[in-house]
Image (cartoon, rainbow, N blue to C red; front, side, top):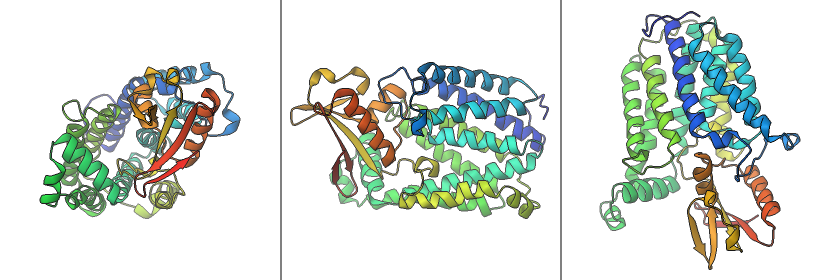
Amino acid sequence: MKYNKWEIKSEIDQVNLLLKVTAFFWTIMKLWTYNKWTADRLYPVIPTFDFLENIPGFVHSVLFCSSLVFLSLIFFKQEKRLIILLFLFSEVLSCLLDVVRWQPWEYMYLCIFGVILINYRKPKNIIILIHLFLVSMYLFSGLHKMNRVFLNDVWVNTILIDLLGISLDTVLKYKLFFIGLIIPFFEVLFAGLLLFSKNKKKISFYLIAIHLAVLIILGPFGLNFNSVIWFWNFALIFVLIILYNKPIQITDTKNILIHNFYWLILWFVMPIFSFFGRWYQYLSFNLYSGKGEQMYIYFLRKDLVKPEFGSITIYNHKPSVNLHNWAMKELNSAPIPEMEVYLKIGEEIKKRYGKDHVKVILYNSANKKITEL
């Protein structure tokens, strides 16, 4: 696929520009979260499989540097297929070495590159598949937010009280609690319209408005929180602009879907199992839903507390660390909200600091349940 101008005249131009935009923002986000891609840190390194536990730390660094080189080549070179293949191999291996690297934005970028690699000479297929990926992302992101914890923790406490400064009395007086359901409702609505509407470009404008709203809420003039997500929202804005710049001509749909059925299973079937704890939450775009457990680490000795842990709270006269705050402080990324990951992190924390010196618990805000690991 040759590309000479930053002008969208054909589907090949769209694919090349999508590839460049993805490579550009992927590079920025990897640099922004560089601690996550190395093993020289305090936050536990938890491999996806146990047999990868004893991989030397320098391998993590080599894979990180290699990925940046590959992304640069993908951005500048015209013939990219072999480079994409080598990059995806090294990137997946890097993610297997530490589960915290399986972030939703990483998953999206991997899917985009995977689709392009497999359908390299078929730009129409690439456009349709990335379009379907976005439908899945907005659909399941909205469905996961349709719960009371999202309304209480995210809508009321974070947006209304922390961001807008509205008091709880005002929230109760004007019955603002359930108005928060507008957010997931519109995500699901726009996902459906994106799939079925003929004017997909118009729908993309509404989705761009959502991403701009997220930037206002989480950005430096809002909550100033989770800064890596700022770049992801900018990336999604560019993807929407490029993808729907031209009308998507869906022809021979049956043949395309049959030959790419595995993507449909990954994007539309597997996320259903996430509602029952049978599939990974971040791979199902369970984002800011408020669901799931939070891990807390209680240190019985104050000298064990490190600056990398982030904000510290005092509970029963002992310092307490929220794993989410620790990950955000040291890695610029959120922890992976999966029970098996929490269990392994708990084991590593007790092994490192001594089980007599720390206590690890999980707190579920939905049912107020506290579980000691």
